[in-house]
Length: 86
Image (cartoon, rainbow, N blue to C red):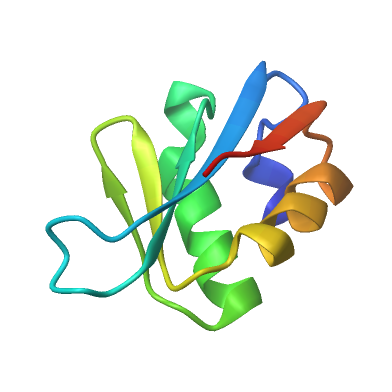
């Protein structure tokens, strides 16, 4: 399943935490992914972290504070530059 992830083709991937407008729940927003890989990345991350993951526009939303786990996961799959936001 990970073969469909086109992460080496991505530029800078930004991981940021957000709570606004989500009923007090913390989510991790993954932005900067290649456009065609959103669904595949959401599916793979959902499976890897055992959390909910959806695609909202051009971003993948992970349910929970998963930035510190998502960064090495993305780098292992070939992402060149992964930055942790706020």
